[in-house]
Image (cartoon, rainbow, N blue to C red; front, side):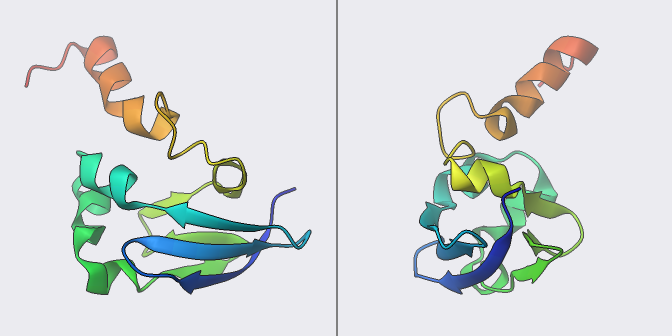
Length: 100
């Protein structure tokens, strides 16, 4: 289990995250937030809002509609090309034949 026990704002959409096993990760959320088409996520491009994160049940979240799986932070998968978080809208477009 990948449990977050601490997170500190490190500037420019970055958080220094400490996991229960003592491992630390510097996670850069800028690309994820700036590319998100979902308004509940994209609004955190406002740095004041971004800094209002919380840790609850060993997860980091912003409000009630935006959180990132600790596993994905641990392995940096939410930042990688092909991340399920970044491609979710593409999958929905295919499934529902959405028109832009």
